[in-house]
Length: 296
Image (cartoon, rainbow, N blue to C red; front, side, top):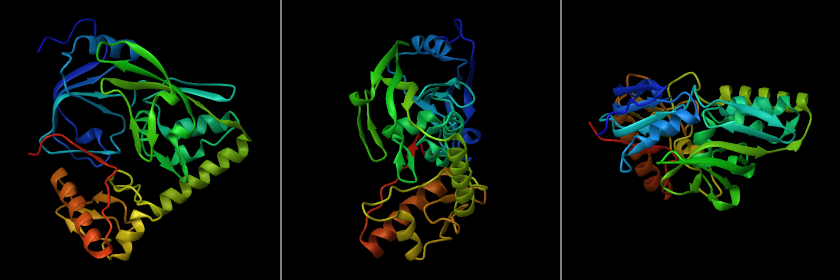
């Protein structure tokens, strides 16, 4: 592989442990790891990569399970960088490293209505765009008007929302283009009402979800007309354990790392819950967490 050092401003690391970049606090090493300073720096970096290089984009790492053998390729982290956000009339333009909760609060402060649900998504805008993340009956792409993507040659593209096939927790896009920014459009509302709504949603989230433990948000998609958490709870699986991972006793659709779990513990618990729900309820649960990388 060619040397990656020409005109780079960000941080390039080799064999970087990924556990500290994921909300489950598990995962092996990244073969290469890059944290760009801005979109221009990201473009410079991508231009130096081989076209065949496997890429993994990480925001807050809240919707991924990286296996203990790590990732054979390059991990690009956007959380803490790519955080430009500004409001113009009824639109919010934000880069993909912006936390969803910050986007919700900025929109509310500007008197825009509809974005409060984003405060309930424990990740960055990039992850929310990639999986059409949702909460409280709303989904990210309900409000997207256009996006900026970057390809493996470092070229930027403007894409309209209607160029993408969007469904529940899924967005079909070109395999070699990645989201770097989006424009979202909201209705006019009342800043105080929206800010109160966000505070209320966050209060309810903290009361009903294990936000004080290493976890990754909802593990399974809700089956049509039902809730994964209800199926797991009524099957008596709260507290079910594999190694250092257990089904949360606070919310059954969460798996927590409460005793130095490995990624394998979590993955095996996901499979065990799937098997038990299929046996007991006749429903095959689909994970919404992306399992990535090599086994140890």
